[in-house]
Amino acid sequence: MKLNGEKIVKYSLMLVAFSALASLLLIAVFILKEGVPFMFKVGLGDFLLSSDWNPQAGKFGIYPMIVASLYVTFGAMLIGAPLGVAGAIFLNEFVPKPVMRVIKPTIELLAGIPSVVFGFLGVMVLAPMIRSTMGGPGLSVLAAAVILGIMVLPTVISISTDAIAAVPNSYREGALALGATRWQSVHMVIIKAARSGIIASIILAMGRALGETMAVIMVAGNTVKIPQALTDPVRTLTANIALEMANATGLAREALFATGVVLFVVIMILNAIALSAIKSRVRKK
Image 1 (cartoon, rainbow, N blue to C red):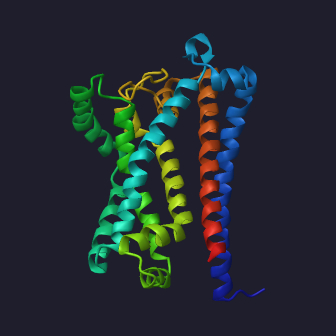
Image 2 (cartoon, rainbow, N blue to C red):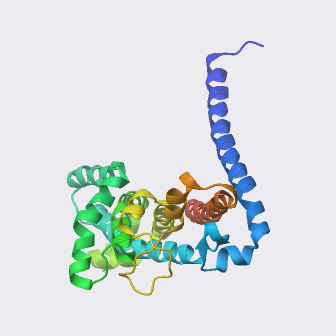
């Protein structure tokens, strides 16, 4: 059978698409194969709900790290989500278009800065500031949340900006024609019309914050305990994997893969929610 150029391109793109899917499936299968048997071996309850993490003594409770990951992630979203959405609204509705076309790519450049740079700034600037004003060691939940909140800003701003820009101008014109002020039209019409896209940006940013490793290792303090205050040092799930994988063997290695399974499942759930929100927005249009 003779293939023309169009069919060659079609099958080549199909091959690339399926290879990406196959790579994801292989990663998922490998992590699940290595981690799930360990969960059943030690017991899912003991693994997820125990506070004792001491691989040398055969204790593999990751509950403090789950709590720490949630604290850091939601703290980051409390900082990054409002600032990101506010920035997106400002860029779309209140800034001249030529200025917006300059500022938006500049903000998106933040996504290209290595996370170790953010971590270094956190260690050298933020941690001493927290230590001198709020007490504690400085390397803490608060430091990690602030750094991650800054790191997720490009994700929230970029996707929210696109969602707000996709709202038809007729919505704005209709609101203004009915006597609404500029802010009322934004608050009561534009944001509601772009709500699903904004929610998707926040959920995707949450997945980014939950999966961040290097910056968190540098600024969180890496102490395995349930935090009682924002100034307490903690260790997240990703930091635990990165710190212990090099020397882990036997059950300890399996425990780290099981930790990866927990992270993988949570991030997949977040991405599924974001995808559902995007599809809902498309259907409404």
